[in-house]
Length: 229
Image 1 (tube, one colour):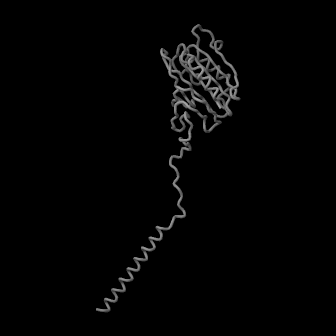
Image 2: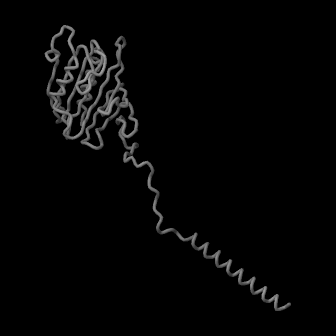
Image 3: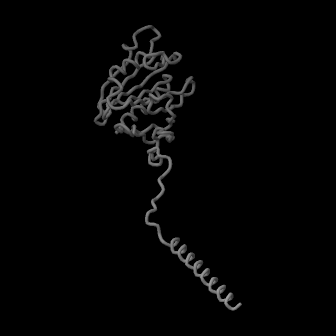
């Protein structure tokens, strides 16, 4: 009987020793700082830091732009910037050909708002200023049947070291895309355009709308082009 009790006591002591060793080992591992852990990678992966975009930046990969402020050029091309006139509302471009688009409230009595579209096609693209000016002018017809080319004004200027071709024309406006008619004719409309020689390709600024609203925004448009940097 005493022998059995002795064997039981030895077995119990051994078992307790094993448990104590296991607990001591586990506590030591959990307290040891990791030497291989790395911070988790940020999620998303779009490559665009939306919080760093300047105020007024056009939408990039779904990022919305604010009204007014400074607008920057394409991150993948040569960047230019300009100051958006107060009261011009930035919109999501209506087509992939447009880099930026602004809505300009129409004057009381005018049937529509005006619109300023900005186009940038990338390095070496976009065509010559003269060809684009002629295409814009051809979108207008004159009530008396005369040539819009003869009524239009074009002028070359240097603005902040950049060559700019200014274009102005009025009449009945029929929007077109790539030379094909794209909308109904709009009577008594006007266009103010500026084709800016960017670092790697032209930038195209095209303001169209009812004549009175366009005329009222002439100074704002000119100041916008003068702010390009």
